[in-house]
Amino acid sequence: MNYWLMKSEPEVFGIDDLARKGQEHWDGVRNYQARNFMREMRVGDKVFFYHSNAKPSGIAGVAEVSREAYPDFTAWDPHSKYADPASTPDKPRWFMVDVKFVRKLKRVIPLEELKTHPALQEMPLLQRGSRLSVQPVTREQWEYILAVEKGGGKGREKA
DNA sequence: GCCAACGTTGGC
DNA sequence: GCCAACGTTGGC
Image (cartoon, protein in one colour):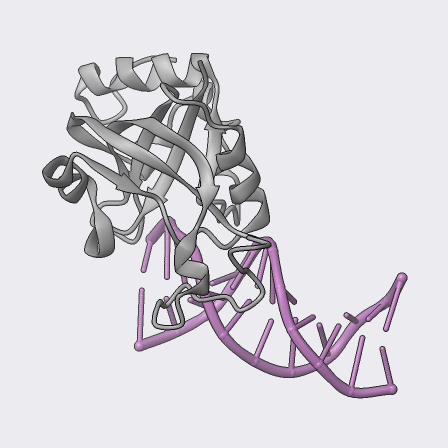
């Protein structure tokens, strides 16, 4: 099983929206690197749900992959803001996965706090200028972050 | 194939 | 709202 992190703006679709719906297709990814990571996802993989452009931005919950990559049909919907004429049902360029709600974290772990942990410095999320909206998380990082959640303190835990 | 211009992401 | 960093587009 693999671990991932996916970003979404809570104003558009946040962890509470996923909690209410139970499951959702992750549409609108229009970046090749992010798309390629989604195609590697398997049912049962675990996902950190990250809130971007939020107050504060940070990891808000846990989700799970419930359907593997299939064509993102919003690409050929001319009314969608994700429309891309270069992607067609015959030759889809963009893909999405379905994710289901697992749980909210006890608290949102802010980006600012994640940055203070040496054990997490390798995360793409923390790299300068990184904008990757779908990215892999190592097992070590995953477990470390869950331990940080329990810690509940602003940088009180030692790495 | 280079690279300037442009649009977008996302923290602050 | 600002703007740095990044990815894509298109002229040449």
